[in-house]
Length: 342
Image 1 (cartoon, rainbow, N blue to C red):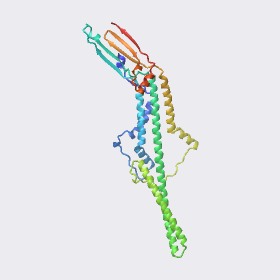
Image 2 (cartoon, one colour):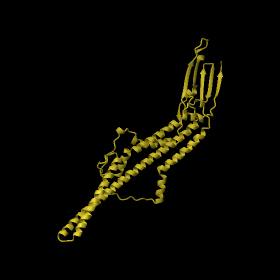
Image 3 (cartoon, one colour):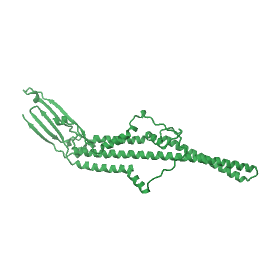
Image 4 (spheres, rainbow, N blue to C red):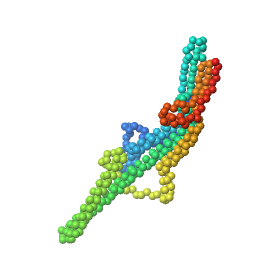
């Protein structure tokens, strides 16, 4: 009787759970505060690409969704690895009789586990925890893939906008030069010079003005796209750096870059975690051949003490998933051990 009453649940967490939880905690300050309590950081002027990325990470709903999927997958480890996996039950009954029987001998106290859920062996619970851990690791890699994809898209738009604004500045200078050329050609034409030079200068100036308008329209569209990624009004002002930064030197050859890219690829890492999870699932399926138990016991005063092991295969309710579970444990055999002192 002391076994079901004194038994407390414990989590047979697989190795690596603590490290995975630490990775999640490192990202929790960004997404755990309530939405109404969050404040997106203001963008300085001029805006650097680091400032843009920081705000984009906080404003992106897809990245936040991937974080909470990761958190939910990590929380499933405790549910899958908790043992015992069945609730303990305690019952009390008292027999009313006119016979001269002591009250203690009329009292029956029973204890055991929920008969509708078989008590899995600890090795099965530990294997289920391994499967849940690999699923959490796969969700972690998905979060990293979404983060890298967002970083790529934001930086591409930011650099395209920066390049386009630099082209706009150059085109404005070019247009000013063409205006000077057209004014000079007009002065020569008034002095009797050839009109062909004036017509060519006016045509070049008009073409340059049209190209400038197209560039400004492209820059406005890119600015609206980038503001949308940052959770800002599409027409909000966005001051970038006055000039492009010089290219950074890369101290690695193509082979090294490809090797690092493959090693750090979150999609490949997610597939590897998925394969590892399938291997653990196969091992868990093999463990289904081991029998499960539903132990119970009862005490009726000094009259009888009973220890039993019931069969949960007869407790199928018609539910597909539950019946499948019952079918997996049809090797459980009912048995009992009783000591009767009556």
